[in-house]
Amino acid sequence: MFSIRSLTRSVPRTLSRSLTTSAFRPLQRSALFQPTWKLMPRSTYAPFSTSGPRFEAAGQVDVELAAKFQEELALETESGETEELPESLKYYLENGPFEIVDKAGEEEVVLTRKFGDEKIRISFTIADLQNINPEEDFADNALQDEMDMDPSRSTKGDPAAGNPEDTMDDQPLEPGYLARVDVTIEKPGKGAMHVDAVARDGLIQIENVSYFKNPELANAETPDKEWQRQSLYAGPPFGNLDEDLQALIERYLDERGVDTALASFVPDYIDFKEQKEYVRWLGSLKNFVGNN
Image (cartoon, rainbow, N blue to C red; front, top):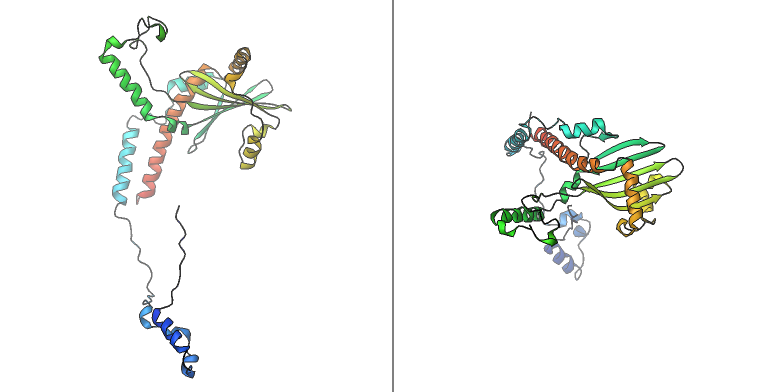
């Protein structure tokens, strides 16, 4: 953000000296009635031009930048699969219980469904791709390469590694990322349950379960609603609950479609949508920068 610069005017030193000197001698009538601007030396004024500002027809880099956008756009669309939904995602949407709301140009994706008298809303965002830590992924890949080069470092037979028959070759390290999943279950006249969870490696991991008497606070969409929400008790961390209670809440959500199928769908759809939005972003900027 640009800082605001204040403009100041300074009185020329010659004018200051002339005024100071005049204070100690009688004022001349001709000087007393002179306009202030006439007392200032001409050298302090910059020449004033009535000609308009100079405008360039186009920037020097416009054509080159537009061509670079076009080059990146061609690379991203050469497969022709940018807009086509992958079969796995298509199968889930056609056979699953949810309707999808995916608006072009927006980061958030929403899934909705009815379950009895309940309204269920699930949301996730492509912004979670920014949470990937490249250093962690690099470390995982480096460790995998090291294990491939040195088979003696296998975990086979190591009780601390779990199943003694498992090896690093059998279970290669694959980088993953946490995709946040917000679940809201609303009942008429009973408020709403809100679940903070993450989808990773085909599993839904619950972090927190909250209750809101006012269902509008479950998905706070204004600063005022967000402030009201923050002032309410959100419940303990899910992991601190009794294990039987945890298991029953997981089954409760599983019956409503918050299950392993959803956990696999969310990261895959985030990958698909992020690529689609990136291609749209490239095309929009190419058209903006270009002259045609």
